[in-house]
Image (cartoon, rainbow, N blue to C red; front, side, top):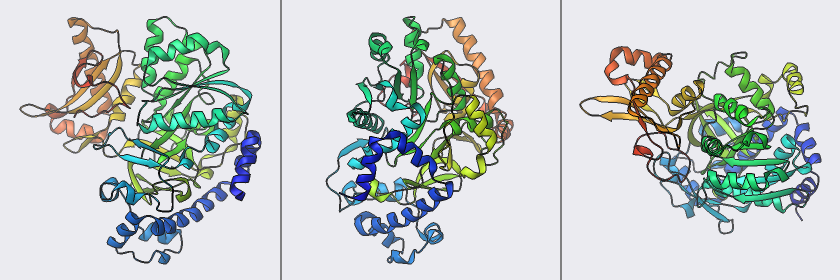
Length: 499
């Protein structure tokens, strides 16, 4: 039996020992380990992945041994993208040739255009990392847990990874976990919680952040006291802003730092980062302007921590570039530009004793995991661009959350071309909410004023608006639930650009 397997078995048999081990290592240890493993992943990918070998050859790199250190890696190894790598080579050529056939297949939601078909190794659903995290945050081994997968079911990555990880953890006899696959069905989710929720210490609902609006609306419709149940939101698939975290914490009566989980990942690269009580506390302080981070300019961001031994991440031109550990995946990616805007901050730069004391006061006294921080500000390739102004979906989302949105389920932005281009915001009402003609006009005028006032705080938008207000003045359209541009059945995470 391999040494790695023996160690993992011992850790799985004693989750608290695993937590002590992970929190014992220094931030320098994690960074150096990441640098060592990323070079190994580069060499292995060159030797085991036909597509990558051909890609490097076309980029003029025939001898990877010339890449001797992390400086060489960053300087000479070309960046891969969906356009120059994934779309250029068939899936079979991008898989490790030394690996067995794929354990699972998934597809992305096609948010950036054509959906990605991705192959996954069994190792990608190894529950060790998530078990350690849930033990660290929730003392999982001491609780009776109902785990509800409320991602889109089928071939979508979020639903697949949530299902496999849930079942893998439930199979470990140290845990008392019941798994329920509900998908995007608020009525079914609440039926289950209402029937058996009181029998559990924790109810983890794994889904997209925005889907919680429909769950809360269904609870309101049936006058169900959802805040009286021990619900833990585990959210991924889209930007989870601070305003919405506060909104959920208030609606569900949560300790925001310890009872809410924010995960960051994507179909092509898997799970990348995860929130911790420390990252949430720092995000709170940045959002309330008690801490200033020069690299975080937007109000719309999420702050998490990541393990450099699994994901080696770089910040290149304000975008994230990711290399995954070769041994942990079926389809290795080297220096892959995921097209998310964001950046990195070292653990040492953000952590201090004052934060440690405040965490204790607010209910979390465990040692921090000394992983570096990653902040995400949304998709770099999803924006409405008019006269040099870039308007991102996360800006609209943040404005709605800022004003205490209790009317709308979703939104889309785009440019309506009639005689001239006009920036347009489409708003979808929550189910069971209807507006008569007078209320519709008043609501439209109210939100037009709100959007314009908030967007004018952005200097690029203000400059473009002053040049041509007839182009940038927001045209607000309001639609009933699942009508107009929202009429397609919900299958995966929301798409925020008008097609």
